[in-house]
Length: 267
Image (tube, rainbow, N blue to C red; front, side, top):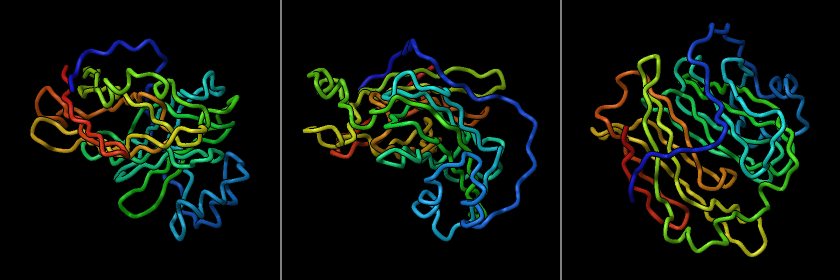
């Protein structure tokens, strides 16, 4: 594997660096959360039963999901999740109410900010939500509606029909940028078809685990990706000042077929 500077001609949704803190909401039971859905989704009750059974759930403006109101390409919908205004975030789950595969990804922020930029596939118009679990066990939920023409989850990837991906599978490229607040931003891409298994004749094939660590071996973020993450996934991760030791970040992981990811990204 090799790492190199990646120039990406695409739109990225960047998270705000500073913002006035919002007042913490009251904790709701699962039943109360179903009744209070600000996105008025017919499937929100199913989401609660699937992801938060017997858990405490609250809608929280401090958990932000930024995405285009209308997706130009249902195979590559740019989304950014930012729960950095919420203290004590231990895990973030991203899911889409009306996708055939609901869960998009999970991540544990470790030493990084509880924020992540990525792209996903949408089968149809849907709320896309992020749920951040804090140390007290409460799930704080934010989200947005995205209108999509559809078909993103059942269309075959372009990589699945090309012999090139076999030569470049799990190749990592990226760069580390300084942030104006003294921290750093990592933007990296992994070559992988990320097939959902829903396209006829194409089996499921996707990255499962990705761990980012600094030169000392300290974990910065752990990502568990699911099938709806877009082909050749592109991740944007922010770190506060002093979070990473050294000038390189290591990306290690595997896909569901056991193929390994192991590369260094430098400044």
